[in-house]
Length: 146
Image (tube, rainbow, N blue to C red; front, side, top):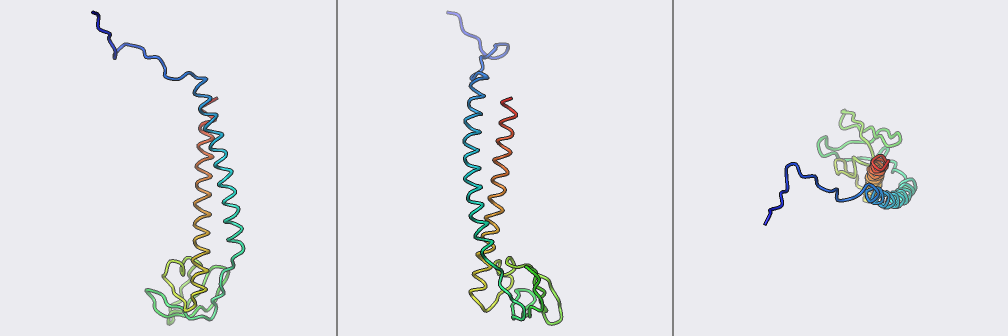
């Protein structure tokens, strides 16, 4: 009985044809396009929620920093706080500085609002990256199928 030789020098048949690969790419592109649409819808919702929330006004309030100690917010321009820690002036950014716990305020509502805003901004960033990744994947699939 003759033994069948495989390996070196033997041409193997392609598992899929060009037409099958193009069809698989088309199906994947459609799936990714639907996912991008859903992600864009979620991004719109998160963006609207974030825009509805305003940063608290902390000007004149006393705060406590984990490293610098007690301080007073001497000025607030948009999200930037200027805080005087016993003559040491520091500029820090809302809502991150409160949401992270570096600076505390005696107002739980302010702390909770800053945490919520920070969470929404993090979610916006994550969604934007996910959309960009999937759009890049779609673009790669389109290039391969042409």
